[in-house]
Length: 130
Image (tube, rainbow, N blue to C red; front, side, top):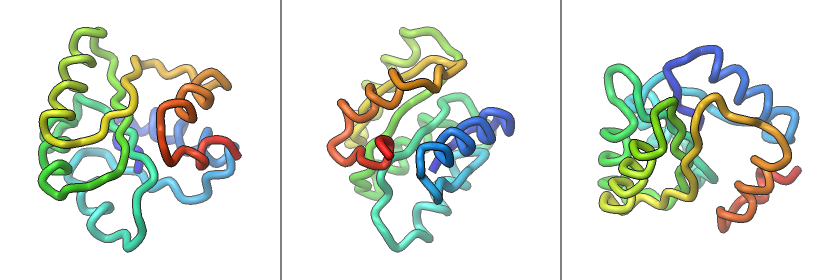
C-alpha cells in the first residue's frame, strides 16, 4: 500500500504505479487504515510506501505495529522532513524489525532513477520494472 495523508500525493503515486503496470496499489490516509488493509490482504505485500507525518496513526507508530505483526514487506519511508529525521525513522524501523529499503524526501521525483533505485534495493522489486 501507499500511505500518505495528502490526497494529491496518493493520486500521484497511484497514477505513477498504474503507468508502471502495477494494477493494485491500495491507498491509505494513515497508518491505521494501512494496517487494516494489510490484515485483509491474503497475499504477501510486495512493498509499502509510508509517509512519516500523518494524523491518527503516524508513520513511526505504523512501523512499530508492523514490526509486531512480523511483516516481511519492505518499506520505503517518505517525508517532507529533513534527512536527519528520515534517517532516524529508518533506524527506528530496523529496531522494530521492519525491513526499510529506502528513505526519500518529498516531493518525490518519480522518474526512471526512482524506479532503478527501488529495483536495486528491494529483493522482490520486479513490480517496479514493468
